[in-house]
Amino acid sequence: MDLTTAVGILCLWATLSLQTAVDGSSHICDFETPDNTCGYVQDSTDDFDWSVTRGNTPTSETGPSHDHTLGVNSTDGHYMYIETSAPRAWDAARIISPTFQPTPAFCVSFFYHMHGKDTGRLTVLLRHQGEVAMESLWTLKGEQGDEWIGAEVDGSSVSGFEILFEAHRGDGFKSDIAIDDITVTSETTCSGIAVTTQPETSPPSTPTENTSSPETSKKTPASSNTSWESSTKNFEFPSKSSPLPLSTKSLEFHSATGSSPTIETQSEEVVLLEPIDSQLIIVILAAGLTFWGVVFLIITVVIYKSSQSQRRKGEVTYSVIGYPANQGLEVITIAPADDPMHCGDTLPEENLGF
Image 1 (cartoon, helix red, strand yellow):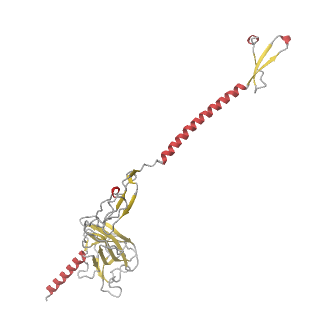
Image 2 (tube, rainbow, N blue to C red):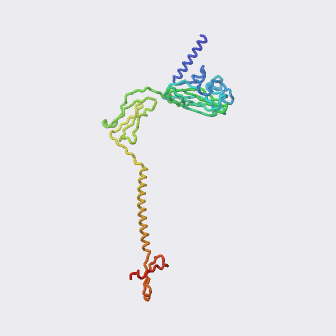
Image 3 (tube, helix red, strand yellow):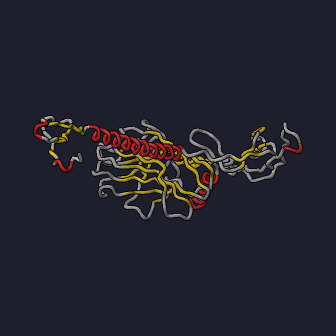
């Protein structure tokens, strides 16, 4: 076997392995493959690129001294990192995963190393196929210590999707960031819960025990919904203004057949009346109290004015003062009762009417 044939077989093996990983349930990348990237490519729209290396990074006091896969006792293990000596502060570098198939759930697990006093930020992004916008799934900023740390993040996509790792340089050159052992697992969450899609089918309805009489009961036909969305999302409960069944016999969910909830009711129905607004009651009571308060005030004022008028009339007294007969004159003096020092007004004799 010549060298050309060997290289061709090796390339074919790498391609088939990559295709199987992308189309299968998991895609694992430890950067130990012949191309060292596992299908991850550089983003052409960022500021600088990620690099694959092994051992120490070129700058001291930042970056790892070994990869995560083979550990501290080996200098042969590879990992991906950003070299931050040349880029400007907060420049970004991104790598893009292969395109994965749509899945109701996926888990991205990886190890990161963020050591250095100027460490910037690491972000995991999701981009749906055919879209430019990216969704942030996970992010971390600043010094995290001279060690490899594991992380997991959940996601889902109804279309093909890509995972992007974005690293930002910090304010200084001691801000190398590294990643290793990336795994993207489809149809499962990071907690290990399997979530699978199934073709929509119409299984036969399973008879439900009916406790009411045949002529007064009615059922909602069972419907199939075996997709990874909630099987009860189309079920609507009656609102408070809608007719409500007077007696609900049962509410059952058939998990075996995947059918929707079934409600068995009697035919007699009653309409709920809207409750009286408490604020309206308060307004009515306040208006009534105000009206009767005004009436009571008017009556009180009238009574008070009437009593004052009677008092003024009673305070005037009429006194007749007689003079000696030899003077041949009588005078009537009128004086207020509360002014005893006032002698009153003397009326002429001709006005006395004697």
